[in-house]
Structures are given as structure tokens and as C-alpha cells.
Image (spheres, helix red, strand yellow):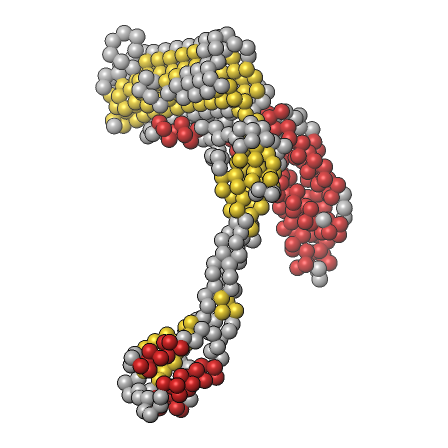
Length: 513
């Protein structure tokens, strides 16, 4: 944008331009520019006076003006504003892994990645889970006309802890475990800050292998065994079970998932069916209803100002809010009757406490409700967090992951994944999910409700019978099959021929791979 100049500068053949953001002033000479008998001092005075007259007072570069005069430069930047310096948002640096353990059905194998993703994240007593880095504010800039250029705002970071096993050391800005736990973390993005909510699941660690015929291991939470489980043992956990070795002639029951870094020999595994599993007793429906009804109440309260001048609409809106309040109280009663358990005791007690406070607020009339709106929002956020924890723990259960299995019985609510060439021998697998075996299957029966992938099924010769029982929606994929392999989709059957590669569907169609 050109600056309107005085006649003397026009005669000198000078053009001054200022950028749209008012951060740069550029001097340009025309083809007919000439200083005449004006010396350098007068030149500087004329230009600087012209700049001041146009409100340009910051960052005038006298050396650039001198170079224009002495070096006959055609163009030069003669004034620069001070740009703002960006700050940095606050953030939480995690010192340990906090990714949720996942076992996902796959037909393409990277054994290392699968076990890494399934591994239980944990913090030992005294471990630093994360370090809080507070935001650093930016520095404002100034335009050449002295206008303040505000630095972009930075977002704060906040930690909320709903666990007696985690503390936030404010003097060190550290989140620390005060017991052996699996951290559960949710991040919430708000307009002006990031909020991290923490909870924890207890973890029991067994150093080394469990010797033969040891005492029963039972635990409300996750169990991690740093070795083998030898003959004659029984492990029962309401959460995940991770064994960093193999299992021999033992029983393993996990309310969540079971991860075996080695093999399974002559053993029984149950994943997701544990009768005492607290996740099966939680009334998730009631918790989710509270979240839904509170959201609706907030919406109607926000809309109240728009109907204040219409008595009929206002009355209808208040009636809707009163109805939602009664429905909330019903769901709250269901929550108060939930039986507690060690694995989620603190979480459930927090939930009951929140519901009690919620019921007290719901006893107010509409005016009282509005006055306590901030308290309602805080209760809502915490219950929403609890709902997410319960839902995720409930949904992500019932999987079994191992490298190989021989002479065993496997029962899983979700998927069964076997990753190594040693595969599955003389074993019965029964699952409501899918099965993926990246190896050989011999003399085994596999019952599944969804899909199955097998690298090699059956073998030449005697004793190679394999029975696969799917459902009406199942898809069977076998990369290499032999006679003796039988497939059943409800009442539809199919027998493999030697060397056959198939993808089989319910309609009895066979696709040769």
C-alpha cells in the first residue's frame, strides 16, 4: 500500500510503501529519481520526517536510508516492525507407555507389533508416569505505526486424578504412581486448555516363573508374570493376564484379555467369561443415561433466554427439564445399588459420590439448577470420564494372544490370535469372535462366530483331521489346505482337497486364492 507523500519526496522520485500488516516500509526509486543538491543529512531528515508524519515511528533503519543515498540502491526496506514471538502450549510428557492394550484380528502378521500393541502398560510404585510442562506465553509484537500485535494465545494443561494410586506432585509437576498400576488416561481438548484425566487399574507382578503346583493366584486387576507358568497352577484375574513365557498344564482365567509371549501346552484358558468380573456387573446403561440426560439439561438451560418472552414456550422448556431431572434420579438410584469390587472400588465410590451430589442439586427448582450449573458441568465431565473407562474396559475384553498352542482348550469371548508357524495342534478353540492362526493347524476343532484365517490346515497322511465350525456370517480363509479338513457353516459343509487355497462363504461359493 502506497503512502501519500509530500511534494518534495515526489520531486526526488521516491515512493514509500507499507505492507498490509504494517510490519514493513519499503522505499523505491522511480526512473527519474534525483537528489539534486540535497545532501545526505537533509535527505535523512526529509524521509524520517515524512515517516513520522505518516505515523511510522518503530523500527526505522537509518543505515538502509544511507545505503539508498550513497549506493544508489533502487529499493530498500527502511522500517521493520517487531514481530510477535509465539509461545508454546502446555503439554504432558509421558514417561511410560500409556497406550491401551489392544488385540486386533489380523491376517497380516508382524509378530513384534502385535505383542507390543497387546502388552499391558504399567507403572511400578514410585514410577513417574508423566511430567507436566506449563505453557510459555508468547511476546507481543509492534507494528511500524506502534500498534501492538498480540501473540497467539497459548493453551494451558490441567491434570485431574480419580485414583488413590496416583498423585500429582505440584512442586515437581510430576504425576507419580504410589502403587503398582495400569494407568488409564483420557485427554480432553477444551478451548483454552488440555485436560488429562487419570485413573488406574491395580497390577500384580510375579517375578520370574511360577513353579510347579504353587498356590492359587487370584487378583482383582491385571496380572503380569515375568516367566513361565509351570505345571499344576491356576491364575484368576478380573483384568488382563500377561505371561512373558509359556503355560504348561495349568488353568488361566482372565476377565479381560490373556497374552502369552510363548506357547500354551496342555492347559485351559478362559478370556472374558470370568463370572466375578466387575465389568459385567456395571450398569453401563445407567451411567450412559446420566451422561445423555445431563447433556439434554444443559441444552435446554442454554435455550431458556430465547424463550423468556414466550410464556408457553418457557413453560414447556421448564417441564422438559423437570422430566429429565426425574429420569436422572432413576438412573442415579441404579448406580447407588452397584456392588463394589477391589479392581474398580475407587472409581465406583467416586461415581456413587458424584451421583449423590447430583441428586442433591436435582432437588433444586429451575432457578437453583441454573445457579449450580458449573457444579453440574463438573459432575458431568467426571461421570463422562468414568463412562468412557467402563465402556472401553468392557468392550476390549475376551481376546487371547499366543505364539502357539498344543493339547489345550481355549475359550474366548472375542478373538484368538496364534502368531507362529508352530500353530495349533490337538486343541479345541471356542470363541464368539474370530480366529487367526499364522501357522499349521493339525488334529484340532475350532468353533467361531465370525471369521477364521489359517495359514496351513491339515496335513498329508493319518491324524490330520481338522474341524472348523463357523456361523452363517463367517468367512473362512485358508492359504494351504489338505484332505481331512472339514468346514461347517451352520448346516452347510465343505471338505478340502489337497493343496487347496480357499476363501469360503455361507452361500457355498468357493473362491480359489
